[in-house]
Length: 105
Ligand SMILES: [Zn+2]
Image (cartoon, rainbow, N blue to C red; front, side):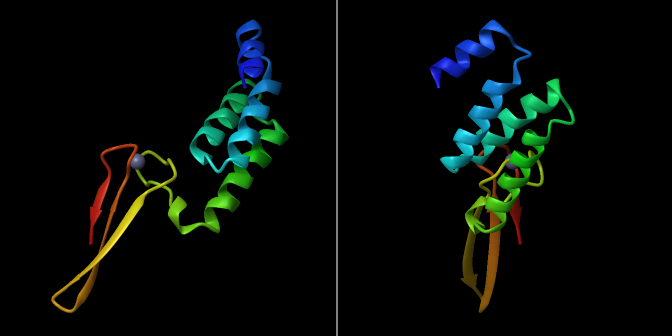
């Protein structure tokens, strides 16, 4: 990872290290970091196919994993969902660990 960072320091418009960081985080299941890296690529090259593919892969990964729900406020992954029962009804609350988002049903 340090080598990638070094490459970015030398040339901030070099997208290759950002792509590598994006795929590495995706492989580790860290979708928020992965998306950030792919978005860096898109800032430099808005039509970059690999970055667009990467973001699509993140979304596909999230779609198959309920614990990776996306926050409607900050759009980061990992909204916490809590259900509890009272009065014979199931209530769900959602909160985001990345921002102030909180939704009580
Ligand atoms: Zn949020």
